[in-house]
Length: 377
Image 1 (tube, rainbow, N blue to C red):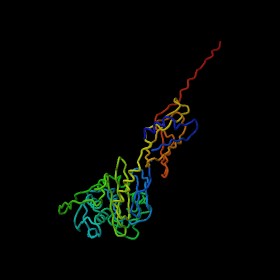
Image 2: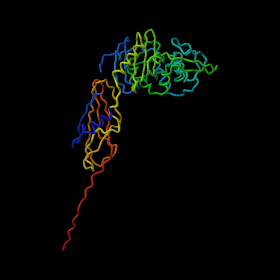
Image 3: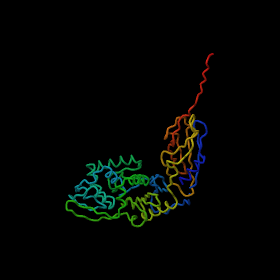
Image 4: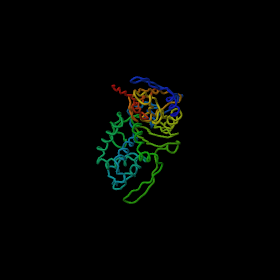
């Protein structure tokens, strides 16, 4: 599609007349039957991992109990703080944590790296407390960092009260916020690696005991292309799942909260998304977007290109528009000189704006003057 677009633009569908600035546009069809998937969950969202576009939502901004899906944020902070080979001695507070467990005991020792596997794969509430204590000195200090990070990511409808998702007043999130957190976390290589694992081996260092653990996310075993991410279950939250999958180079993130059948809901969401949507690079650096006039230059026009790629999430049979607002330049013109911007729009999504720059330089025209010397006689 990018090559086709480049040819259209280079053919003159966006050109700039001799004025201080101008606008032009080109539209392209890429398209779908937009009947949504069948779901049993009270809240859900489907997000394009690359663009962040919302492809489907159901009560996605409603405050809900997130259960152990909370642990995405716990793992994200621990990974980003580093010290993965650090040895953690398990406290009695961590070992006695109720609910789903990695089954660690007081006085045992594990690396941060192994505890992260127990946290994300086995959904260990005990591992979450051990990691929080090791990372911040106390659970309360760690939770404060979780809430700061949520705000940084734009998860404004989220508040954490613990690092594991055990039901507690004031502990809530939304399907949209959890998709935001998941989208960011999946850009972190170690996080992405752990949540995709079906099995892993962890070692208790004091007694040199190795054991195998298995991922609670059954979607990894049943949905082709599944890449993660995290299960969650409590009486208050019901069955929850944040799931991701890749197909044909596209990656989607599905969140289902308080579901009667979380795996069927996630499969239906992801399959529907892959069937009806595509992630498309509609503009990329290196393609000629327009020819911009140069006043006083050696050439009348210079080509311009986008400074950054523009990706869109497009339903099948949808139209997008590229609107250009470009400057008329005065010689001399440098290569990669800013020369305006383009705005890419498609129905139902925020506009994407990126700057454009010249693809080549152009020197000022050389004017030759003749001098006549009149000699007196």
